[in-house]
Each structure stands twice: as C-alpha cells, then as structure tokens.
Image 1 (tube, rainbow, N blue to C red):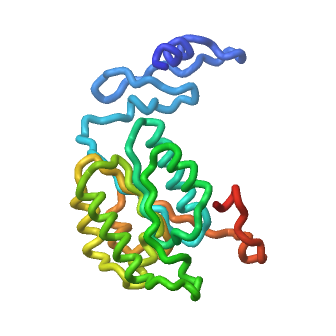
Image 2 (cartoon, rainbow, N blue to C red; image 1 turned 60 degrees about the vertical axis):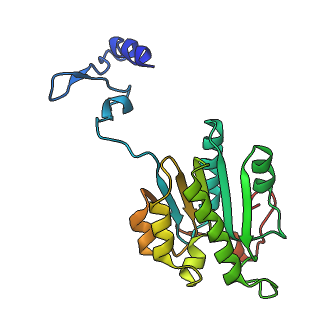
Length: 221
C-alpha cells in the first residue's frame, strides 16, 4: 500500500496540477499523504501505549444497537477471535437468524432473558433472569477465555434497578486483559458511558413499529 501511495504521489493529474508531495513533520521526517492530501493512518500512529482491549457502548432510542454489535462479532470471527454473546432480554423461546448463523460459526450464545419487557405473560421472573445472566457474564469476563464478549441489552436491567450498576462497572473494568466488550441497549447509565472507550448513540428518526409495521425476518431477526 505504501508503494502505491508513493507511486501515486509522483504522477501528475490529467489537468496538469501536481499530485500532493510528501510533507515534513515537525521532526523533519516525511509524512505520506493520501490521494486526497490527508495524512495516512500509519502517519497518525503514535508511540503512546495502546490498551489491551476496548469497551464499546451502543445506546440510544434508535434501531441498530445490537445489529452494530453483530458487525463487530463478524470482524472478530474473521480475525480468529473467540466470541461470547450474552443476551439479557431476549428469551430462549425465540431463536433469531443471527443466533443460528453465529452458533454455526463457533460463537458461544447465551440467552438469559425472560423475553421482552412488554411481554406481560412471561412466566419467568425477569429480575432473577437478569441476575443469572449477569452472573454468567461476570464469570466470562473474569475467566478471559473470550477475546470479545457482547452484553446485549445489558443497559435495561441496569435502568430497571435489577442489577447494581457499580458492581457491573467494576467487573467490566476488572476484566482480564485482552477481553473486548460490546454493550448494547437504550438508557445507558452515565457510569457505563464514562467507562466505555467508544460510545455511539442511535437516534430514532423514524421506525416502522410506530406505523404498525411488525418486525420482519431477515431485517429484524
């Protein structure tokens, strides 16, 4: 890639304007530019010590929080990582497309929820289910066997007061080195926001459910 950039910088544009040349950084070492004239990603790297893992938080009222987490799962699998997904809301009575495909790819998939919170006919105690799911998640974080752990909809049991926020934050902070964590769910407490290295807020502009359109296979599950 560096060779491609170097050769590109030596060519003239078809309009007779020279392509960007190498600029000098404060220490006079050359800084390669991309074709658009921006410093390349390699040039932006510093000698600062890098963390062994990251915490990503997808929150907000918009759609796509768990979907974005699944994208990270695919990237992790492509890198040969071991991955565990713990779901805090979705019930074992409902099997989604992402669960089937991820399990076929070797992902450890655990559902600890009692169903969606608006399903009043659920026979399981949601508080007990949330606590059991968190006990498992805390064990996974402490063991360090997975390079990526997704805590799907963890924020809801925290918002409802079913789990102690400080205990959850402490366990995530004390996780084994090399364990990356993705947390999803609306109403994330400030403590999680402060902990995360990446925080993305999904904003709802429009949602099919508001127009009476139900969730669809292949799009929503």
